[in-house]
Length: 274
View 1 (spheres, one colour):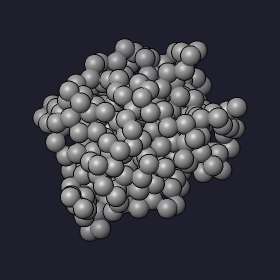
View 2 (cartoon, helix red, strand yellow):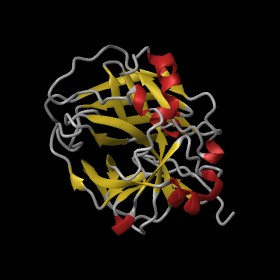
View 3 (spheres, rainbow, N blue to C red):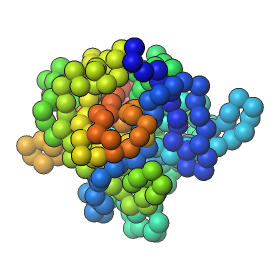
View 4 (spheres, rainbow, N blue to C red):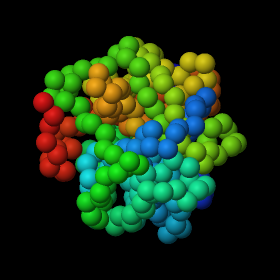
């Protein structure tokens, strides 16, 4: 294997290194554009309080997707070890007091990490958070489609995916405005070559990082969507990991949502779209 792997969790107030090796949890949208208010009304921000083994608390920041009036989907590494999460819905510019924004606190018992999540290999990197109440959808807060039944085996290769998130826009500057970009969904061979045995085509999606554009060390858990013929968006992936150096053209890896639909349905009670 050409490279070993490590994970660095995205922290809002501090950065704590994980005991793994050279790939990193995705932290920001490189080469992106500022989103308009309500352009990604299903995008949520997730601030999660965690604790180290010696009891020191810190806060991580991730993205996520609103998949129903009471459920959010994100990456497992975002909620793993979480004590409590605050979910930001209807937000675009975190520096402003925006109309329509809601912030809800989620207790530990409402955070559901996939049971077979393997942190050391960043495998099965998916999680759910149940909101404390059903929310009222609005101009600024909408749900995103989950894959239809006939899309469960769809690989979406050579389609254009939309990725979005907050975090950093380069190695030193943090964005307060939601950023987005459009990227090709690549054949599996690209990520298999880049990441070797860590890339699992049955449960992951490979995304183009050419021209320095794409997710980069964060906004973990944020959405990868494709646009349907009727203009709605379908959630294809959740940001998982990539190379440690931003803007170098390396592809990044997303958790394949369709591979976990049985688990999502079991946990949430959401009905499969036909």
